[in-house]
Figure 1: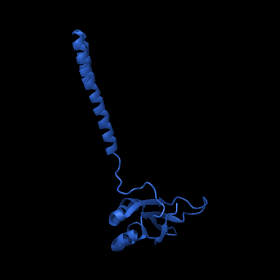
Figure 2 (figure 1 turned 90 degrees about the vertical axis):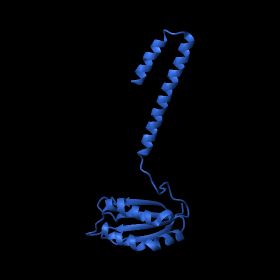
Figure 3 (figure 1 turned 180 degrees about the horizontal axis):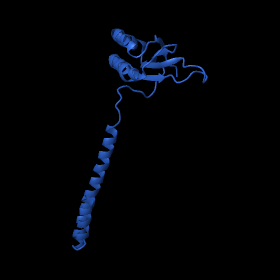
Figure 4 (figure 1 turned 120 degrees about the vertical axis):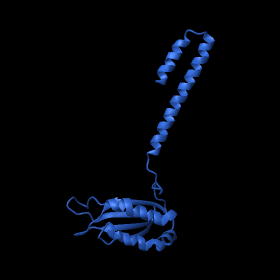
Length: 167
């Protein structure tokens, strides 16, 4: 609508003196450029606001980091609620561990070594820390709360391994 109005104004300007035409055309074109710029800026702002914020750096691990790997073995009658684990348990763990937790990841088991073999693990969780002491100091005070949540998503006993990233 605004472009149509400005087009009409431009055609009306053709009946004015050349010096005035140049001034008004420049003014209208600058206004149009400003509107286009604001439209693009608004679109970019809208699109970036739609992205999910992440509170934990998930870019990549670094040499020397400590990884706490939580493996959930598969077996007869074993169950695992991946939705609860990924949307409630792990965010709770991240919140409880605070800034000492640098990154986390979740794997969902989808197959064994061959097509006929069952998955060895229902899921695997990874917690990354800069130092072993960062894990120990942050986990100790909240361990009971984390462990007490396990029955809410699985009936299998997790296996924990602590490792150091080499590469």
